[in-house]
Image 1 (cartoon, one colour):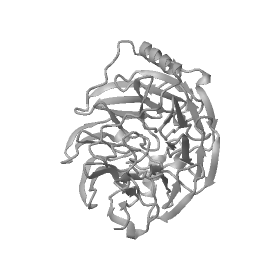
Image 2: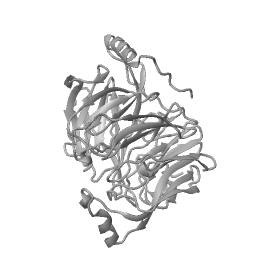
Image 3: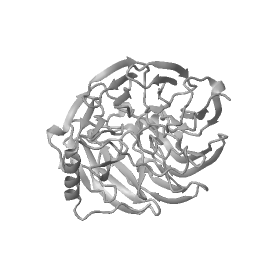
Image 4: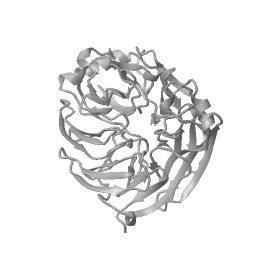
Length: 455
């Protein structure tokens, strides 16, 4: 794909086009996905468009038992990255740990902030995994690198939580400050490796996105906060942009883990990325900050932003755990009027799904809500699960939710939130499910499962 053209005066163009859009009442949201190589391609976290909506033709089963498993493949190590798929191959990442003794863990946590929510390993191997989609055969288990003295991590996180991204026959495997690797999707050969080191405090989280031959990484650490783009072909740095200044002095309140949403606003491509205190839009071509909005205290923001018309709905992170809707109306810093509404409860980890002008979400403790994204009004609230990290998938008119307790539910996608079925998995589920044809791919803590109709 050809690189996005950089305009001589992007601010003036942004304002002029935005004014024209506002005059006609606004344009519908447009998500620009990577071009899929086949009908089953799911090339990044939450799919090609970043919206977790399966193709209209996809009709996964709404209930199942183990007889409906087409195959199940044990996976080495530990990793919460979601599967991605193209050309009949499924890619994930994993981290194989050498366990530390209790005394070693105590020494590693000495002097770190918030040690009560952290643990540590003696060493880590970083793996790229490739599974054949039709058979479930593990084709590649590639050791990419090692960390002899890895930083502490939250036990609910993993050292392999960012989801890979696929484009043009390449696989991008990202492990936060431990490194980013580009592989040839056919051979598994490593083409390049980069490291952007920041202190994530509790492990990596943000997933890479690929746009116009650029790999975009969010590096919101406790010590530094920036986004960076590298060339897909060479790994060379294209641009790097600092995040807006943050009032909080404590680094723990400056970190975030959100994945960029690629969209178009006022005729201009942009990456919308929530972080601590701020949500901002950036040009994927140049990295220029196009706008920013201060939403107040908020940190460890993990869910992606969701586009509704010309507004962006996102979760504020920990403590308050509220949804915020922002509508940027100018370039640069927005006024307080850009904040349209706030609503609770919001998830600190799971990203909601927007469908038919309704927002569907589930909180960390398992409360499902249906929300009107125009007003922030909660239309329905149902306690359905507990201990949720995975983001839902919308497929065939149903929402698929999974929990760390190994329980899944299938919910009719309408404001009534009718639960159609409940299923038991054999292990916890942290990774988000994805579609594959008319089947469902679910990664548990121990294996990858392809769920079909049992035939």
